[in-house]
Length: 143
Image 1 (cartoon, rainbow, N blue to C red):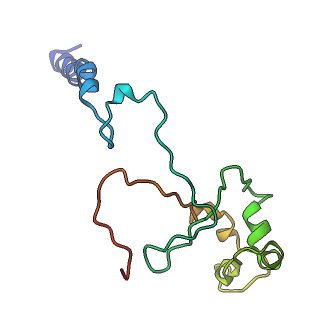
Image 2 (cartoon, rainbow, N blue to C red):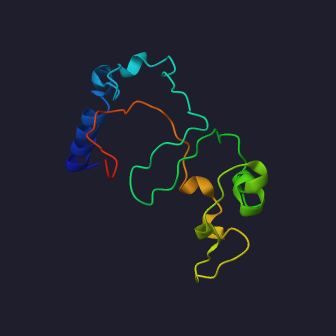
């Protein structure tokens, strides 16, 4: 190993590994807790089941006002579609999926949900009344 390579290895080791223990004591989470003291699960915030939140910007996909953690969504099953697809939404008394979900990439309206709109949680996320990690000045559109 030549002197230049050895110098780089030593510099890398000193820079990244030696001060790691010292730096860990100085690192704080976004909420100000010491990293070493985060053994307790963070406080959770209640999902507001059935309460729709305002949209933050025009054409924002609606937030999901209920739990979806155990929903099965794969190539064969989609529990969202079971309740929200147009023939079932009346029976289930749920919000009907917009017609936009039935339009394929060529602009043809189909009788089934288009494959590009099938994985609901790619756009629609469960709402959560959580405190922001950091303060911000965000204001919803039109407010």
